[in-house]
Length: 338
Image (tube, rainbow, N blue to C red):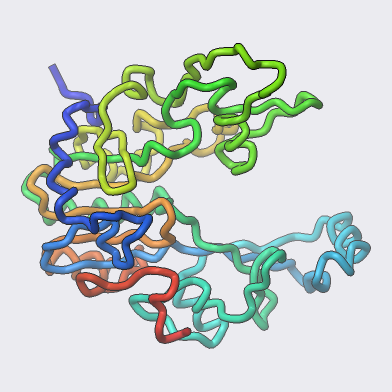
């Protein structure tokens, strides 16, 4: 009988080896990349999550700040102008803003003083408006690209493990007082707590202290089966994960989001792309390499052999730079751009 390409496993001992190679305080207190990436590998690479930028075709954006230019923005939106949009590398962003791209670059250093709090993203001299790179998420096509490259550097490509941080909204079920994934407002409009942080807080923790004094929490299902939600976790410093045993060639397929157990069909528009979070950790059974995406980081770090890291850094599909073991990837780690 054929084995399922990816299935939940409660045998979390398979990931226990990572614990001793991580900073003991984890992402909450670690100042180095080893808050989430294991020590002891020959080489490391950092994949920068791409940003997005857009600009109107044949015209300029209305002036800022919004608070003083409501009429201009209202007229702009009423005209519904064509908007160009594209994915861009950090190197392209650095060139646009006259900053320096390097292995320990931080987004705020790359965009510099043009990032204004309360506005919708920094803009360059050519009129492009930039969105922050996603944190905790390596785009699905880049997950496939990185996995394709890394599978050539393991003896067990069809035998590995994938871990997903359990804290993503709606992923696992929980005992609570309302649905884990949808909050209904007084007006009856549904809010998706996976994309609205305030709604997520309310959906998972709000309770009417006056009218529901005697109400008991009930089980609120998540995306994953109840058996998985109630099952064992891979507990690493300050991060608990749901663990899956996997044929890693599945992740090398660009269509992997359609095939993983945590695919979120409730968020998928008819005819649209599959909705699935990118893995937090991936490693083959021979431990030849580890791919790690921390939920609060806008880059993914890979630990492996020198040959594997060279392959990742020379893959034209990825914006990847070699980094030293112990590199500071914290907010203040960009000493070049300040």
